Image (tube, rainbow, N blue to C red; front, side, top):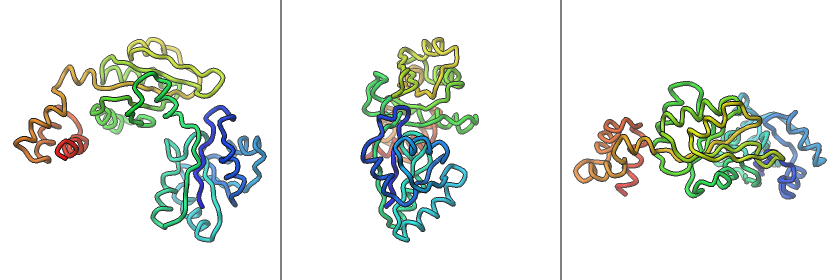
Length: 269
């Protein structure tokens, strides 16, 4: 069995008895950073062999895990903090296990995205999680274009030294709307700052401490400047095919064709 085990994001009290039992029972624990994980494992007196599995060796180590599982051994994977596969390695392990028909499961626990969805004060259902925005201009613009199609809460992760810059990008792209910045979640100095994007830009003129989560509702600026996407697609679908309607709407609203096509399919169905 492969166990993907969620680890605390700040408060060791969030580590469940089930997680401790799973890590104590396996043959090997793979870690995003073995030195970082040694602190957690030592605190709970878990003495098992560890091996690294991070972004730069994920494919090689995944093959290694698959061979261990085929040989009948139990393996666990933990990232530095939070849920493996959510802005951390882990998804490749799940994909490999499903492809090979190998047993795998998740031991649930803390997740900054889910905590933030509730603590933000914004409607928590539905919400969309995008992790970290890319730093490179083109992929960053493409992700913001995808977010532009959403009209509910969006959750982003951001490092403390880039929080204000990202807030400015969101304000420029989507206009002024409700938002929240959350930091040090589950820790002693956990804070939740709410307001509009423009207010938060001013509030975070100085770099905060600790990793941050940004929650906001996009779309205000787009709605003022352009027709509603759903309304336009519904009108076009009366006379056009899904493909043609999506192409026309994407061109007219300057939105990504793939995302508009998916939305057109949803409306058609």
